[in-house]
Amino acid sequence: MYKSAGRLVHLDGKMVPYEEAKIHVLSPAVKYGASVFEGICGYATRDGSGVNIFRLREHLVRLQQSMHILRYEQAYSLEELTEVVLGTVRENDVRTDSHIRIQAHVLGEGLMGACGPVGLSCTVSPRDARAIEARTKRAQITSWRRIDDASMPPRVKAAANYHNGRLGTVQARADGYDEPIFLTNAGKVAESGGACLFILRDGVPITPGVTHGILESITRDTMLRIFSDVLDRPAVTREVDRTELYVADEAFLCGSAYEVSPVTDIDGMKVGKGEIGDITREAWDIYEAVVRGTTNVDPAWLTPVFDD
Image 1: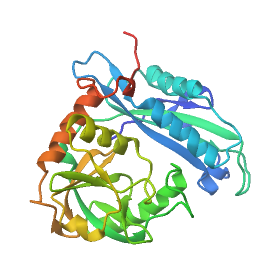
Image 2: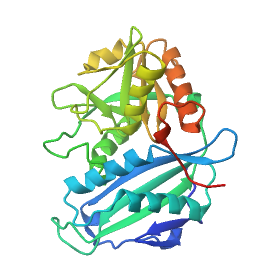
Image 3: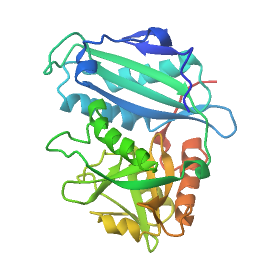
Image 4: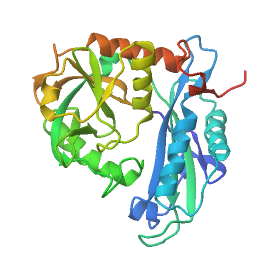
């Protein structure tokens, strides 16, 4: 899906060849998963005249918040982080759809409690656009429970948190599904291994709240705005029972990499008719128009990369 070989990587203030972008095996980033990151999408405009990064500021604010919660000893301003992202895309001259990963990690050979020194990296990888039909998912309620704020807070976008998602994903795929859906310790629906979840019942979008074991997802927030401002279907944010998934009319996952990915089957039971729902498809069409700059929900959501 992503193409990285031959690209340049921003590493601690320098652009280095992809093959040379390395950190030490004894760094806390490797030993303890001491890193936080953002996955951000760049989109070519439909007329091919430019490239925009979607909701860059919000992603970088969340990165700052993750670093703050984990007590990193070095902070970066929004201006510094913005220039790192834009500079990486420009240096690689990527003018297509792309996936950008900016990561702050603890270097050196410190012990578990080390909060520095802090390194910063950024990569950009061209990716192919995919039709919604190519992103349908079959999901399984995983036996693993979702992490919570009292143990490993999911609002921190930390690499270590994704071990939870990975356990569920490996289980789901071993059992013949594409994605896991996690429940909280209270037995309520949280999210998948790497994306938030919406269901629709009687035409009403419903999604778990940000205190129900989910990442404070920027794509989820985008979908809330699309449902309220464009589709005139304000979403309900509340606890969701497991059995509600089985009687939902439609369901989809959303995230920067997932975009809008319809869920057509949960635990071997069809969601609705077992196909992409009409409202899900409509929401995707609007999302696609928003990221391409042909529909405007908020003009601040798009950051142009190139001046020409």
